[in-house]
Image (cartoon, rainbow, N blue to C red; front, side, top):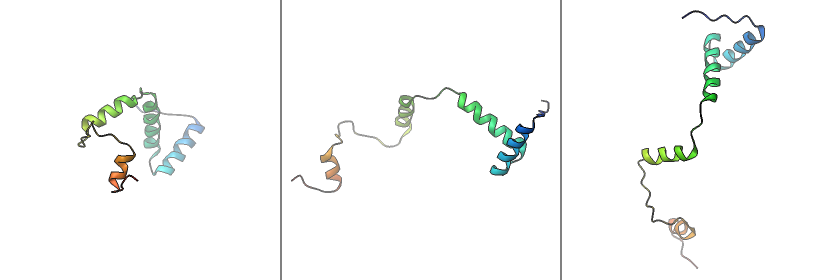
Length: 82
């Protein structure tokens, strides 16, 4: 693969700023910026899919019959209903 030459002062200055801020070389800073921009264009995963994946991979098992209400929270604190 060939080299990439950017002959633009603004691009050079931005690459230098990012490189300085992140402690990178200019090449690494340009790669980082391009990777971030490409990632922004990727389709976003829906919240439903994220939750489904968490449920599938989680070691925690939740009893679907448990009702999470005030009585449940009170039971966690050993409080009695008045």
